[in-house]
Length: 178
Image 1 (cartoon, rainbow, N blue to C red):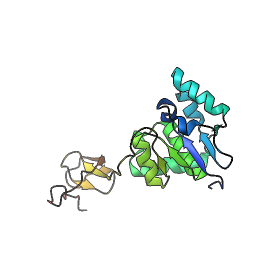
Image 2 (cartoon, helix red, strand yellow):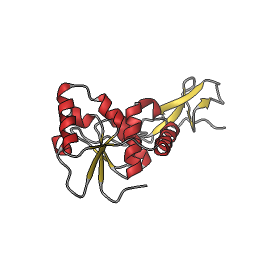
Image 3 (cartoon, rainbow, N blue to C red):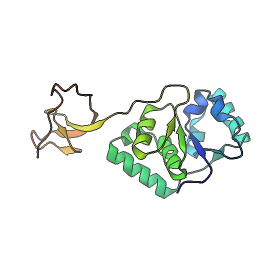
Image 4 (cartoon, one colour):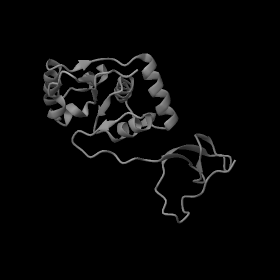
């Protein structure tokens, strides 16, 4: 359930990258949020100073609800992204999803997962990630499938992979037909 006040959820990269503009005191009509897992991730002395200053200036530490965390976990598993995200990343994504917030991160895997969930992202010090197409591919015969499991053609494991962009030559057109 989104808040009525605009929110920005910060990933640990906001403190490591020195995103001073993001860490400045929020205005009266906005909030900055961070989950407890991100606070625990920030151990570098300079990043820790940035975190403590942001906390003094109104950064709120909030844990996502179990329901929101469960929904995000389910969506990232279904999208094949869960193996690329840390528990702190899942908390950041769940908190942004729960509050209808924009996610501030330089983590490309986190940006891709947020895009799949409809959570807007804002890069900190790098460019935004390019959209990636994910698919499932057989480790044995190389055919693409609809989901993980066993290949009906050769019996090998079908697992998640990024698909290359096709050029219309038909080179990546091999699919598993059931």
